[in-house]
Amino acid sequence: MRRRGDIFDEMRRMIEEVMAEPFFRSARFLPDVRKRFPAVWEPYTDMIETDKEVIFTAELPGVRKEDIKVNVTEDRIDISVEEKGEKEEEGEGEYYYESKYHGFSSSYSTPTAIDPERIKASYKNGVLEIRAKKAEVKGMKRIKVE
Image 1 (tube, rainbow, N blue to C red):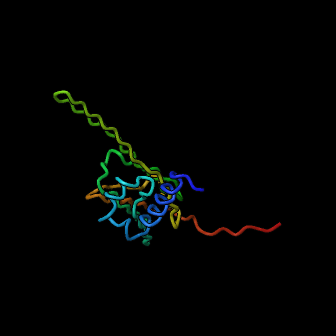
Image 2 (image 1 turned 90 degrees about the horizontal axis):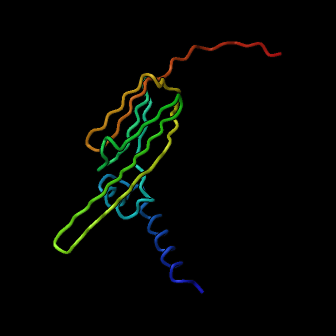
Image 3 (image 1 turned 120 degrees about the horizontal axis):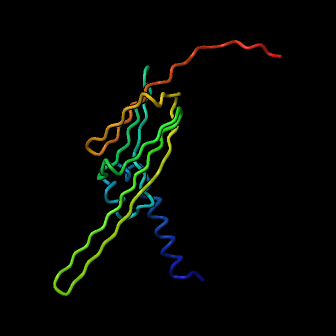
């Protein structure tokens, strides 16, 4: 016999699976998904490699620039967002307090080595763009097998 909580947990899991589909993760649906199912939210991302650089974009609608943290190594881009907020209102015989927290952290492997010293990140209209210059390859070296 199932407990009532088990059924609701199963329903939440099924809804979260459906909401994780790419159609629902599009920019049009993301703000609503983030409010109702914060565990599901993961930004829609893209990574393009050109001759000279790697361009990474992430859709982060409704996120403030101050809440975004980016860490970069030679082969990885780490992004984390942490939003905190409090709202407090007092009225005649009433008191209202609201606290919120949303966040995520993800790592993305780059298709080629990048130079962590030559990176630019910008955030405009809900889109984070990171442009990383490719690391210089020293060339091939032949080694003797012993």
